[in-house]
Length: 385
Image (tube, rainbow, N blue to C red; front, side, top):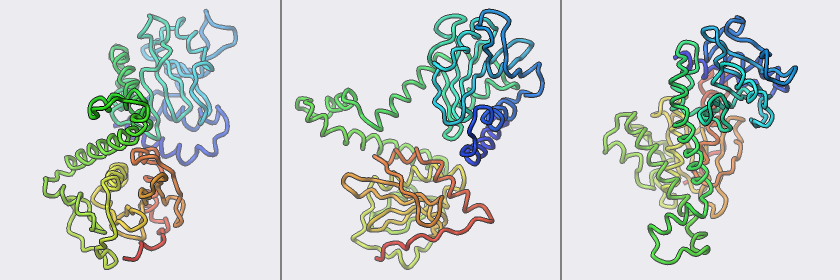
């Protein structure tokens, strides 16, 4: 729990303070030392546990130092090199990690800018740091499945053998997941060609591949939306009848989240045959709801469809917009978020899967509504029926 709570607290601090951090030293003080202390549980003021500006006695270039060395049981276990928040994490600018790795007892190396972390070991060759990390995570967009791996690095749970033995598998799984994510966002010719061969009887010419590319992207987005919906269904204990309520007929203007108490739609939500709720809009709604559960109960997130946009609201209240989806354009799709005020901020997307890239903005507006001092947003009214 300490790791989870520490990350949540630190992530909130990064969101609030990162714009004011301009140097590497400020990044260390504001974000990296709290990570070592509050997330991993090491005492940053005890030189027996954490040594800043660490210098090995032999084997490295004179005067070169590593930003932090973390000790356990009297031995260096973790080396950490730091960059300014916002800087790209590139090993070309962290050559001291390679050199120190070979002359100390450390088998774990970390490269970080305070928000993003890359963790390395020596899985390819003994005592030589791998060129590719086995663990990559972003505190502002954390994959919860990685929490147990981060916890293995903490003082309370540090298990070098477990970390190293899992590193190779994590490296490959992480690499495959990143490939899948890129393919979903921008399907490559090879990926499209694979599906064309499965569903199309003709020859997979370049023209055919181009025709199928958006279809592959759309199918992947719909599949992911379905998986999100299934997981929410399981989490809420919904049965099949309740779930069908979420995918109600397109003419319904206001729909409570499945499993919530019955809510009478407001008068302005009279069914309008001109309003058509698409599968893509429902997929987008399910993604936004999945993001929102980090801040509010899922049954509080509802949608209302209109002629020109698809609105996602908190508590079925038009004065509490979470986001609006504009997905009906032939070539332009975008998301509107309301963390900066009633006018909203436009965020272009290529498919509903890209909504995940704006999770922080969605959670931000929900936190505003939960704050007693926060003003209520008053957006433009829904399209008249």
